[in-house]
Image 1: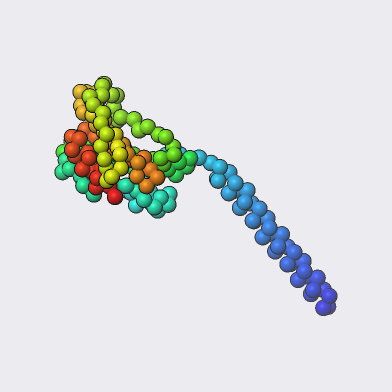
Image 2: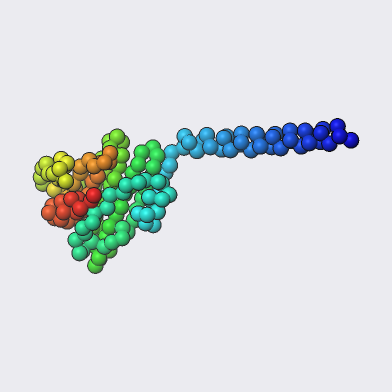
Amino acid sequence: MGNSLKTKLRMFFTFAMTILATVLVLKLLNWIPLSFQKEDMRKYKTVEDVKTKLKIPKIYVPAYFPEHIRWPPAEIFAQKKPSVMIIMHFTHTDTQSFALSIYQVDSKAHFEPPFRTGILYIKKESTVFVNGREGKLTLAVCSGNERCNRLSWNEGGYSLTLIADDSPENILKMAKSML
């Protein structure tokens, strides 16, 4: 009877190890395609959702907003793969129309954020400094003859861009408040 118990225990142990090995192999096979899969741009409700779900430690948001721009963002889109990209759109407090877009993109991605609407012409481009970093300020006119100014610079491994229908002074003030 002792041999029979040992045999049963050995068979149970072998069966348990086979199940465990099968589960591990299946988990590995499930993980492999996910590791190569590109993450599509997704919509998020809050900046905190982006931080926690995508595990992005630093998201740049201005501490200063002109009174006519509504907080929180009207839309937030983000992805982590193939490169980190966060896009936030803000509206005017009174009309709910476009006021500001903020792009935070991995600086290695070489992504050029588009103007929100079709650009008619560029009035002026100049070099400015945002917290000691060189940036490019573009004063432009977009469709509907609305101003659509853009400020871009690099910060902390990211390319940051603000596009707004606001004055260059307000855009620069918002950019300088993004620490």
